[in-house]
Image (cartoon, rainbow, N blue to C red):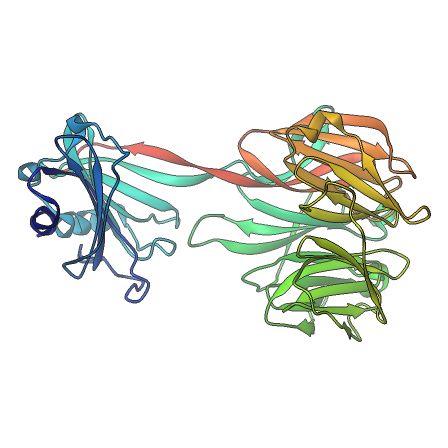
Length: 468
């Protein structure tokens, strides 16, 4: 039906290249596609005379969008002959569910279907869903013979919590978890306590948030029972040794949690928490474009007037809040606010940090530090990374002197020491990271680096005997 309507709209010279089912935002539900039918499809046709593709969207049997890409050129040898299609999605969905326990997906909602011509000239019909472990899965069939070809699963590769070992890193948690961040007890030198948080089985529909505590510097871990769908930040109370309390930030609240009694209390609630900055017992929260400040670990809060579109906030030990808003940096106190003049030529700020109570900014090609005494900007010369800037990480762990600057270039983590004036006094070390994960956080513990990482995802094939 789609080919006939497309030919009527476009002309007789078009040939079929690909068919893909598409989520319908208004009509998608968990089990949609369980009968092999979808309401919305994207079809790609090719003009057999010049190779130009036509992109067609069909919804409820009607063409709703049509675009001719006159600059495209698709190989005419891999087009689909509709006469070769002997089965359709409704024929194969039952086999996929019965033989592979294929369940509906939650990112691509329900079951999805793709028809291509990529297997030795044979048309391939693929059924998409999730496997028994909740991972995104596609099962391929020969659309001419209906024979099963293979399955592919999108699985996490890498990820976990790593400890520095010479110029390499060693995994100290189970592999395959997504570790978002970590924090140290304020009495770490005595109690060796670390907290990490993230997701078990990341990328799976069965993924769950976790919080783990180590009391021996990272050798052994205890899973803490917290029932949260999402954790954005965790930190230890400044009086942890006395109250056994950690703070848990979610999308819309901050909770005080006693790890011994498991008592939990909400100390802050907002519709969306955009940024949180903590300095000992002082907590600053950016929520719904409002800034809130507590000087007693959330027992009392005061709102700081804000009329700007703020996206980052940082605290210093002098009682100031720095805010990045619309490309400008503001230094805020409860009673007043002042905009800082930026260095000449700086018009795009990616990140702000505080180093030794001095403002540090990063741009796409350079770093700058603002000296409070001279009230002047100074460029931080790190020539090795200026040309290929990727990610800047400042370690903010407790009792960290001097503070280190970490720059991530590809899979190389470079550590620098900054002196009081903002000069790079030494390049401390380089660590090569594994290729199969993404760095999310760096923590320095007793002179050693601990790295929080999340996995990449690869399609892993599962070959099986053909089934009729």
